[in-house]
Image (tube, rainbow, N blue to C red; front, side, top):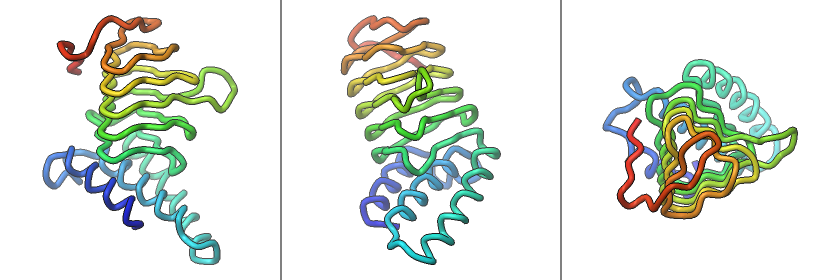
Length: 178
């Protein structure tokens, strides 16, 4: 793996319990995403072509086994943590900052038949089955409540809840435990 990707992977692992491979299947999807990032950095040629074919086969297996779809094109900072794996889908153009937390059923996707996808800042937490759709920015340290549907920007240090989500308050005193 490339040096920067190794650092992100270490940050990812630091947010999981020790030896997560059998207890936390979401780590498989995060690892395979990082592996795909490193394949993209390979020099073009025969070996990259073989690696890319292998990547896509395993990507589909990991997606089916975990219910988490994180394509290699997604820009993700280090420290991604996915709790309670399953039904997590992330649009290929999404950008996710460092130390973000996703829970089961989260969708980060487009709103129409377009390529616009969400951007999450650093330290963002999304509750179970939260949906962030379209060209939306969720600021640093923001929290999105369980079952919320976010269609507009959320300022940093704020919490958004509801359908459609409304910004409720500063996150310093909020908790969105799943």
